[in-house]
Structure formats: C-alpha cells, structure tokens
Image (cartoon, rainbow over all chains, first blue to last red; front, side, top):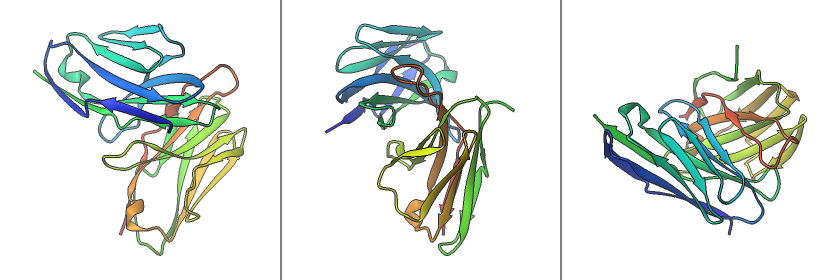
Length: 110
Length: 115
C-alpha cells in the first residue's frame, strides 16, 4: 500500500536544541518529495523539494535530505519562530498521485 | 494580488444549504487542486484539474461538485453536506509538465463548519 508516515507526531525542543523530523514512504515511481510548513489557520508553505536519493537542500536553520526510503528535516539551533507543523508529501507514479503525511507539530520553547 | 487566494475564509452552513468556495491563482499555473484537511488526519486530495480538465477524483461524495472555468479559477460547490464534512478546505496550484514532480502552492484555506 502506498503510504507516507511522519514521526514523531509532536516534538518539543528548547531554543537552540537541534533535532530531526522523519518522513518515511513506501510508493512506487517516486516523482518528488516535498516539505511544507503550516502555521495555525494558514495553508501549507513550501520549503523544499527533493527528487533523488542523496539529494540535500538547505534554507536557514533547515536542511532536508533524501534516501530511497525516507527523508529527514534537520533543524539546527531552532528559534521559537520555527514552531509550526511540518508536512511531508510524496508525488509518485503520475502527476496526480500525491500523498501527505500527518505532520509533525514542532514547538520551540524560549 | 499574488499567490493563491481563497474565499470565503470562514463559512458556516446548515445541512440543507448550498454554498460555493472560490479559489483564484495569480501564478500562471496550469493545474489546480482541492484538498480537505481534518483534525488529526493528513491532507486528503479531493480533485485535480490539469489544463481545466478534471484528471483526478478521489472517490469524493457527489455532494461536493468542482468547477474549473479556466486555469486561474476553481470552485467547489457544496450541497446537503454532513457535519463530518466540517474541515479546512485548501486550494493549491502548480505548473505541470515542466519536470518530474512540480511544486504546489497553497491558499490560506476556507474553514467550513456544517451545523
């Protein structure tokens, strides 16, 4: 069964405490893996897209990596403003096949 | 105006009402999407329109009826909804055909409550 699983469901960190979020997937014909950030009451905001195993992307305190089975979103020295829900999505098989994970709710305490 | 705009932002309707959600994209994209986001559940893809043609309908009940008059506008017509249809409805757009997996840009959503 095609599936995208994110872990942990929720993560509370102290400001400056680095950690990683996980997105594992089981689909055939990966066409792209996407990370989004979603703040309460808003739509998802695009962060990164990764297309092949070994690829890495960075933006400020965030770094996304991809293997054949999973992706990690590493957050280095986070700040309270990084608090949000982080969503992972996978496109596969055809352009219309998209699955989102349930998200990780990240909370950064000052 | 830029990006993807959804109206209204909030909607309360009774089970016998008929209402419509509107989405407009100002990004020059050729594909548009409707998603449903319920509490504690992943985003669920409902409909996909590519070049104004519906290419995906993920077993959505007929009380939800999409309309895409052109590549910039997308509507979701609602009638005789159920309380379990209460959710955040998100619209997205992307430029298809230019690569292996194209980026979707989302609107802020319409928070729907069915009484």
